[in-house]
Amino acid sequence: MDKVVLALMSGVAAPVIADNTPYVRTIADGLSQMPLQEKQNAIIRLILEEGASDQALSVAHEVERSWNNGEFDTAIELLDRLAELTNLENAAVSGDWRTPAPTVQPSRFGTDALISNRDSVLQVEVEVHVETGNLIAVVLQESDGWLYSMFSSFSDDGGNTWYEKSFLKSNLVIGPISAAMMSDYCYVAYNFSNTVELRRYRYDTGYREDWFPGGYAIPIYNGSIKELSLVANDGWPGDVDLFLVISETSGELILYRLDVFLLMFTPVNTGISDCDRGLDAIAASSEWFPVFISYII
Image (cartoon, rainbow, N blue to C red; front, side):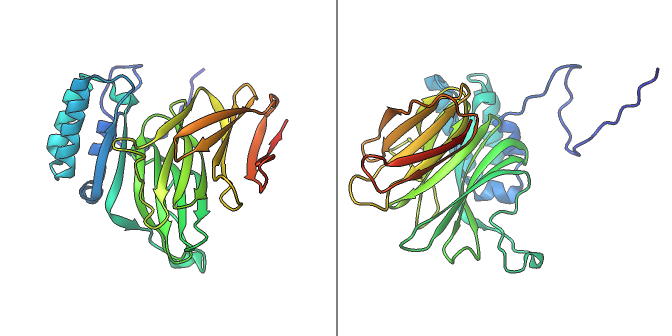
């Protein structure tokens, strides 16, 4: 019997490759496909796979310098050389917009305001800095020439207008994500290639800020997870800490107490091993029970 097959085409041409060979995008593909306006606006930093050689790191710095000086073709050519030294399938691009990218507000949304213009949004986390009313949203997106992108968006007028500030782009899986505001930063925990990392964004600019020179993020946990929830106890007297709850694929819940000033991460035994889904947490005003956790079994 004849078979009728419907082929769904994305409209984006892919390189010609051998039959039955899957095409895997790299950061070179993503960077080369960025619109010229975004290329000119982006200050980038490459994140190479763990254990990359000193030679690979040196070439990566050359790529960054060329790109950030507007020499985009040179940067793309250097990426070909970099691909011979490290696996670019496991790399990522972190960066900031020189000029914050505004979200265009169509009239059809009435009094509602768009946080992001981008399609294929997977998750959004929104936090408020109580003293100023500034809002920071972290948007996790799929597609746009990459598999995954994570953006920070910022509003200093109560959410009426939003501007993209920083981004993370990769073809490795990003997410789930969770955010919490504490003191001068919006902290974001996210799963990146089976490693849970923590980033931070300034309350007054929305831009990402390194922990130390070269420290764009700090790793907390390595392994396969289902969900995570980040909360802060910023609103009660005593030590100010972040708490991160991670749901492993086995159903076990792990609680981390994060001292972001000393960069110490203390695991706390929850005794919970039957979490199926629906993980959530809230910080409480008690030193004995600082976090309440809910989940579905």
